[in-house]
Length: 292
Image 1 (cartoon, helix red, strand yellow):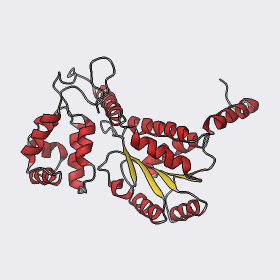
Image 2 (cartoon, one colour; image 1 turned 90 degrees about the vertical axis):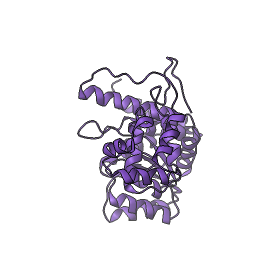
Image 3 (tube, one colour; image 1 turned 45 degrees about the horizontal axis):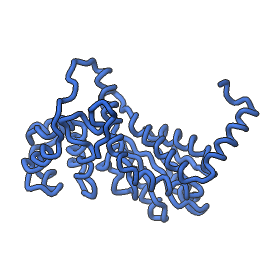
Image 4 (spheres, one colour; image 1 turned 90 degrees about the horizontal axis):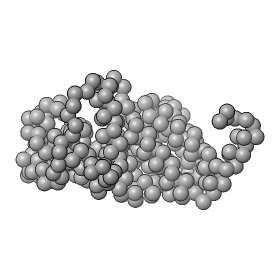
């Protein structure tokens, strides 16, 4: 699933690195332990070096023990870590390595975000999951949008734009004992799906809320920081987008863009989306809402 931007550089990863889509395929459908998810996350972040890391080096990068790396490889269906590394080398395209020019920490963070966006572009080569998610969200009346703590801003932005084309969007950005009540109210009002943003760190009450939503019959669509995120087992359709960890606080360019892509897919599934947008623009002009 390689996408090329016309410059001769693959959109999924630097040439010579493992395509992130191939790594995600290794993890899909696997019930990984928290330690194994940590190793998987490390491999995704180290796509250029992944085919050449020893088990000891990978363990040090991931902050786990060397036996944990071996158990991780076995959990993915390989005889051991050497077999996993051979597989990574087999699927890594030949070519020059990533630009190794010196960079200050701020530049490194920006470059990491660019890499995450390229990973997202590679994953979106298969548009099926996003298109399916768009149809599910468009059909849900009302549409609850859930995001707690660090994810609240993403949920709030998605709900703001979704409300311009969807007739009934309900933002759930606060936890507490009333969260389950609000999910129940949405379900009783006719909701069939719930949109969730789940970015690190993942609140325990978020997992409980997703379990409750699914128990009521809602289909949970989640944008998370990877297919191995803790919310994976609590979601019906998970859309991964990596977060940056090079700065004090995580950077979320890829999840933010994926949210906008999902909004586009939802608009495509709403036959009256364009009419609603034009109606809003007419009202906004009449009220003088904007200066431009």
